[in-house]
Image (cartoon, rainbow, N blue to C red; front, side, top):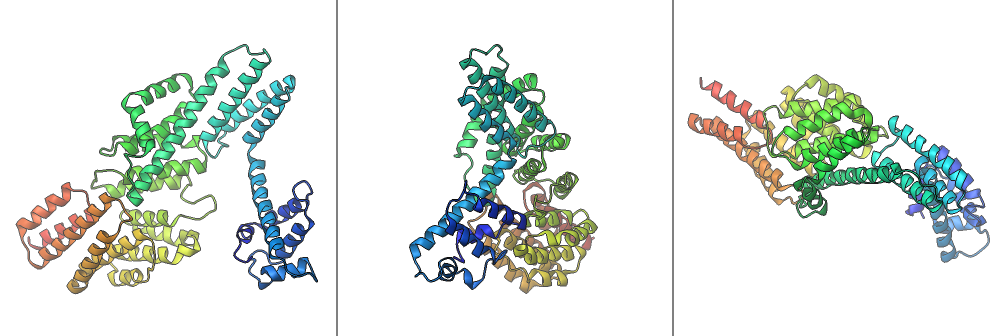
Length: 493
């Protein structure tokens, strides 16, 4: 039982949830089996970790059925029943706070009983409540609001038609408006996931049905016509849908900055329309669209840092549970250190304890390696770098890149060549990354090795050619490479 899903769920319960769950198990409405309650009361003694040997099935059996021979089948069923009660309890807890779903379910129940006056009064109250919660940003995801409003208007029309009470067409207009608005938002959200998956795992985008569907709508001006309609007829809904549409454009048209900047401005101007949860998703969409660009600019880090500032301004860097995603933490360190070392140092010290404990040491060591490198403490940076033992592919990439830079700065040719060979082999042997990233990382390896060769044997023409190539091509650490070229140019003046 120690490795059962039952205990895995119970370990997540807070003290208050455990008290409520006991009431749930004691309720004859939900549980009529006394032995299931006995099993829970025995398990509860070992909260919150539930790791005691007394939780082995045979030992728990003795407490529940003293003097009786152990029966595997009965014990298995008791554990299963208690596990199902856990699942039901969690569902009830979610349902309890879902005001919209509870209202819709109640209205469906009243409708099926055909209680006309109560139905009309309750559905009008529900409509007002839904709209109030929308305007006061009470919904975690607005697509759920539009889906709920669609169901409400559909239910209202169907009920009034059945009772010969239907007198106006407003509901017939609002229902499809909400249907289309909520559907498109979910399509744009899914498209973001498709792009993100492509970047991280090199999965194809153009064969994905979401890409094909949205591209067809876009190519034939259907999306534009829908946006124009919503803008004209749904003044409250348009800014919400338009923000998601801007995200879609920024993600799909990645060979210019036009749509990225439009999305960034739109998100900044309309952030007050969204909950923290939804705003966090849109913010991640902004980061993804920035990383998905086919072009690079000299002010890359400055632009990226401005996105980070948006995240802090809207208090969405941390997750709802107060933690910071390890990937987000390292991204902030990587970008901010190129703009503001003091900010980076303060960020690491202030938020390092917010990293989930299983990732904390590696992320902290990595961050300190990056910070000390920027400060010019190359030996110290190397000390932190070798402590990183992460299994995360991208952190491995970044550490190997950092070590290559350090050996360049230390002018350690032997260590540099060893790191160069190891990194280039690592990049080519890795399948868990986007093809574009492979190209840019391999290019970087070639650039820095050429740079090391030119430092040892200066050639003004080759240095100038390298500078031109790096300037026009997409590569990681472009500013660093150009800065090192300038240093070599100045040495020969």
